[in-house]
Amino acid sequence: MFSIFKKKEKKYQDINPEEFLDKMSSTNAVVIDVRMPAELSSGKIRGARNINVMGRFKSKVVNLPKDKEYLIYCRSGNRSASAAQIMTDLGFESVSNLRGGVMAWPYDLA
Image 1 (tube, rainbow, N blue to C red):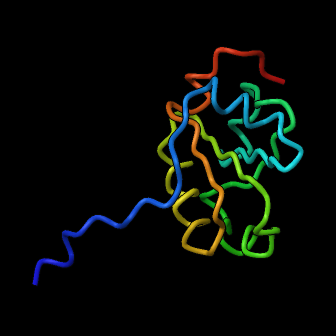
Image 2: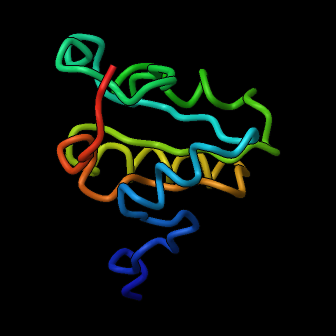
């Protein structure tokens, strides 16, 4: 009866910047910046690929290899959490969200 109030199971993990940086060193890691293109002028994490979550995100990620480790971030961590949930719903098993987004990133940006 109250199933509309049920929270969807979170299948991704929220990680801090240190963990994110550590996971980036894996040869299996793919870093995805889900911000809008206009936001990229403020800098992005080195090696990140931009796939705007507000665009056709689902159709752009659905065919990515499922065996990679995806590291997702946005400005504050909210949109990237949504993107991470979309990806895990599509069957991606290794997805991590940068807690606090790029605003929490203490390292250099490209």
